[in-house]
Image (cartoon, rainbow, N blue to C red; front, side):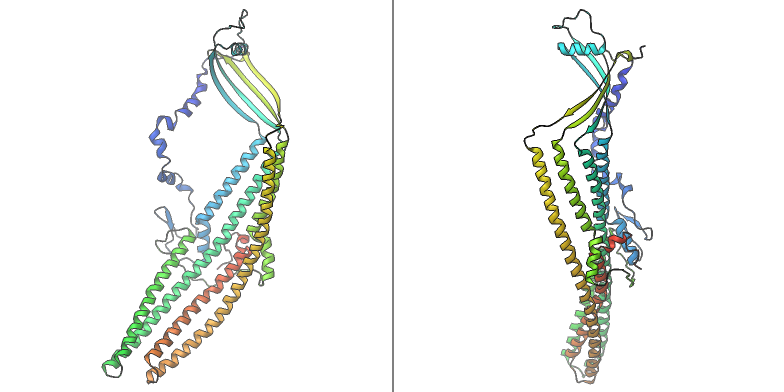
Length: 493
């Protein structure tokens, strides 16, 4: 029974659309879609959102926070919006796409084709006429004549054996996904610590401003008293000038402190991945609850189990071992199941009673490849040796990082105790010198020195006050705590 397909020209429609698509019909529009602004606009909806706890608005292509935020909100915004975190997520998506690609090897590949040919080659004439089921009975095989043919069909291929390479490719791709997810944890672990550091740096810079302004108020008060005494003849011109110089220095300190505060806020905005305008307004929250081991040995044990860098390099080591077996699979043959269904006709007048099909199994075995397989094996072994050393190096680096973090925390704690005592001493010294100065037994120079020493002590105390929390946050980073909780500082209040 015949089933003619008289209008087979529809088979060429997808090809024509592909060839004469945007590039062929609308070249200007086609190329304009690759402009930077066009790409940004196309993928604007894919941009990350800020934390739902934070206010949000657009400033150009960046997001800005226009209300006071505490430490917990800062960390949430950083984890939701920081470009490094977004890049890590994109790497995970690429690894998952690689895994999807390796899984394709376990499915059959099916394709459609259409071809047109014309010629007078005897072999082509005979085979195509036979496939058309139209071979003339009195054919001169040496000079059969001119042949014209259309052929359309489906092809299929399924790999039956590939030396285990397909399975190893999938296992390596799965490991690659795990490595990418660990890489995201590496980013999150460092990002949370960086956000905490930037937050406390901004609070310390703000405290410096308050201290500097208080110093200005103190010197201005003394200058007013000195002016009265000078006009009354009870003070020297040099004393008055000394106070004026000190007032200028105090005002300069305010300017410098305000600039440092703006720089600290800009750094905080950068960590959060938001626009620096309007400036971030951090709200102080002094409670930092982090459950990390109190001592170094416990911290090292915790880090060896939770630090994502270690987990990552260990998975890379495992993948290197898989790569050796994949290289060795090159010595084995490949076995494929292949099939083809097609019809031929000189005028696209396809009929099902002239259909053709073939099914077969093909074995390919590379007996000699110029030692390329051996080279791949040696390369894979060298990569494994490199990863063994990288594993050892990473473990040593983590131990050193943990050790330094605990030492810095101890130093920060001791420094806070010392500066608190120094502030008390400086306050007492300034009080005594002030009384002596007012009584005439101390010079203005001695008074200004005591006032400057008090301010320096208070600055050191403000820095040490926040350094202790920064040191705790750094211990948490060193042991992998922020990667472990993975929720972006859920215990920070």
